Image (tube, helix red, strand yellow):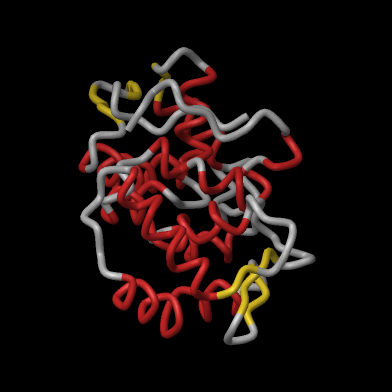
Length: 205
């Protein structure tokens, strides 16, 4: 992961604006790759063209080069239906395009592929989360080091968080979010302080 990558410069396209229920579709690198490809077109893309472009970009990113048949099968039977089910894309069985009311800005979200190791689904599954991404943003906006107390306070203000008091938020941080982020190398924490590492997800703009 690169500490110099960014998620885009338009606040209207911030990942922070994505509905929490849509985060599930962002936790697989191939779905992100599909969004990246479709975000570069202003038309519906035929399946064959989409398969070819997803394969080419995956190879360019240093991933193993899957066969077109394998990519086509996974797109048709898993990823495209899931993206369509969340209203992110329009998919008619032959062509795909960005949904007219898509809750996720494709080009912005696809930049996760530059910020994360796109081959490491475990990192995506852990970090792409309606609580953890904003917490990482807070850390970086505060110079990469922050007290757990401040993060707990921040957690109570998130739209996606059901926690309204700082004490419960601190417990959630200690028992869930901080251990998970530390386990994938996004943060380090001890003695009431948390800091991002050189492997952390960059600030969302």
